[in-house]
Image 1 (cartoon, rainbow, N blue to C red):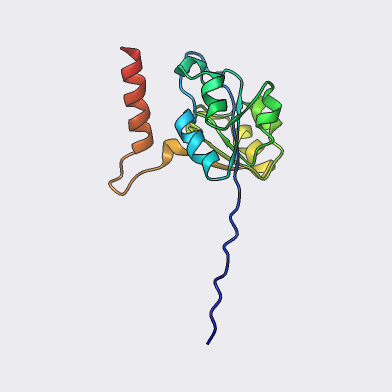
Image 2: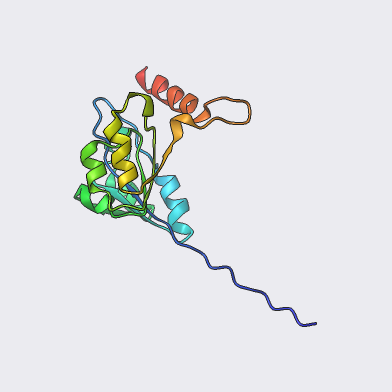
Length: 154
């Protein structure tokens, strides 16, 4: 019997990271090391200019890691996957072309009804990392983010 290996089709991710607009938000969804890991594995990452500035990452740090730096927010929301720390604003939801995946702390409990309806209308798969629990029932992402925020506050 003759066996042939079947090549697996590798899908490429197209990830966008916008600049955070929330008051006193200094975090960024991807650090340059994560961008390097993604781009070294054949994925595309676009970062809005100055997205990492308050987290002490320069546009140069991101471009050296393989990201493309863009100067307008609209270009970020053309990506198939958009990652953000804070929830998207209604204006950002309008920029989404639809059928995208959006990762952020959605803070669903404090959003108005039309907020979720707008995401549904765009057929956005929104993943609220602030609701993800590990096997021990701990919100590990929120705990880690709290530790980061606490360390930077000092």
